Length: 70
Image (cartoon, rainbow, N blue to C red; front, side, top):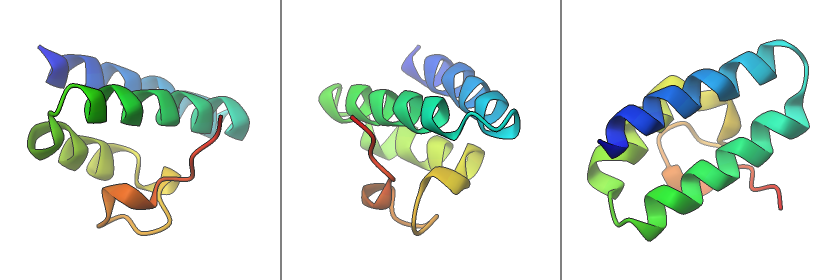
């Protein structure tokens, strides 16, 4: 279930980023990262996020390198 949410949110993050709304994309990515972290679904969801929206990370191989925006 959470994997489907991650995929859906990554699509929205991508759309915002492509539209030039970087702030919105990073804010949504931060919120998504926090949900994944709080649900302890790292092994399933962080790889999806890393692959789907690598541009929101400093290092697309490290889920802890997200450009956090609060």
